[in-house]
Length: 74
Image 1 (tube, rainbow, N blue to C red):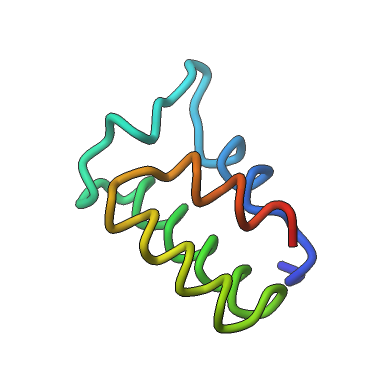
Image 2 (spheres, rainbow, N blue to C red; image 1 turned 60 degrees about the vertical axis):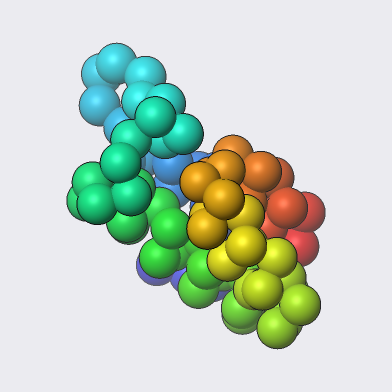
């Protein structure tokens, strides 16, 4: 998978036939963990340390959609 693959696209691939609300999943859920790991990887490689720290803070606040929005702008 390329570093250019946007995290929001990954979120749609991790879903099933029904919509998943990542903000309601527990952080221990494998789908949430995969989304978080890839989003942080993307943030680090496309936006640098500052964007990585922003994304980490948003995930720590359990706000995956804000993290996706911030990282998708990179």
